[in-house]
Length: 106
Image (cartoon, rainbow, N blue to C red; front, side):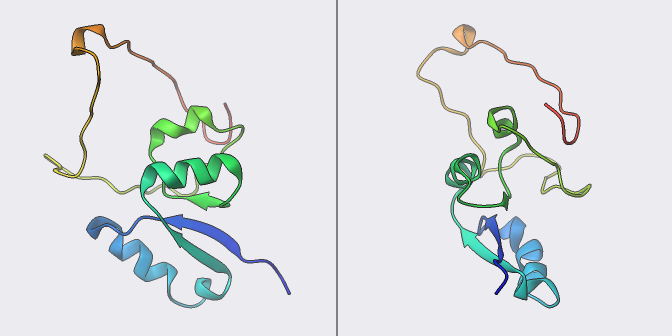
């Protein structure tokens, strides 16, 4: 028996169309959907508990290797109430980190 591809998903309203497609033939028999919140999926991807996942782009530099699959993302035009940044330091003390992604490379 062939092992299924472990796919990390988040159950948010904006991911429903993606999840709907993943739960249908022909792909549904080839994958195992693993639901968690984004930070948990990122950790599972880093440790190999999932094979691919819907994770924040900020985790990409932390991966030993990566491939961006497809030309699509889940995004929004305008304000999003489900995304917030928190810090224990004043904003003036936060350092900026910049990186560039080339698909399949680090």
